[in-house]
Image (tube, helix red, strand yellow):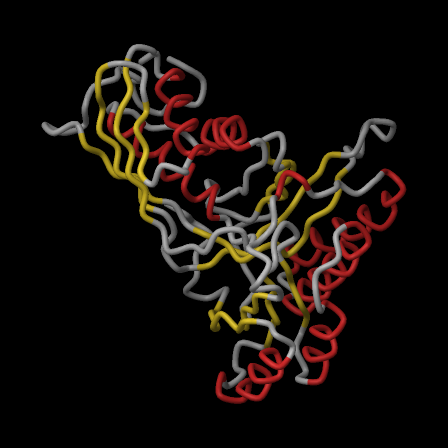
Length: 316
């Protein structure tokens, strides 16, 4: 049995039609993104890492039908990473002479840093494995996702993890608890068309002390279930990100958040989306003036959502 498989990998249709469906969740950027150093190997190079902010809304849905030959036909045609993921999954299952037709459906905006490509890729992997009568565990899904898109979000895990997005491995597990926030989502640069994640710079080794402290604070905050501290960590992570990849209007956004007594500010470190973090009992109607102020900055409010109670990290 191949590593990571939880069922027999025989490649056969899961139903009479050979059609299978896979689903994946989504996120709203990161609580933390930075660097991690193994404590037992102080001299090693740092590992880029992140902790995402999950969203309860549905993400991508993939429909996959097996077909003879190695070709992967994908719709929409531009979903190259997902087509690559389908091929990688079939090869991992030993189905090297099998291809298929892949159709993707997703409500997630692209280029904003909300996990659209990982959601597509993960849904695809699940659909392909289901079509072959097999399942893959989270570790294998992470490995294949990184091979398909170079850097991946940890949407395949059902807990809070410190994740090495370019290696596809979990560095630390921090449990299943997520803080409760009311989040106001704002696209800070709606005219930009988003960002190419893989072209963004990675922080240098000179940031070691700052990121080591940030990871330590985040770890302690999740273990003690301190929502206020997590909001502070998210704000500091966003501030450090401005050194390597400034976000349009970031200082103005911070000022607006502070004026409305937000607990903090989190961003997509690889996109243009930002989230103002408010106490969960905040009345959404009280944030209407803030929405207008963001629009005056030529930003695009994207709505509100809640995290924590009633919101699972699970993306299955």
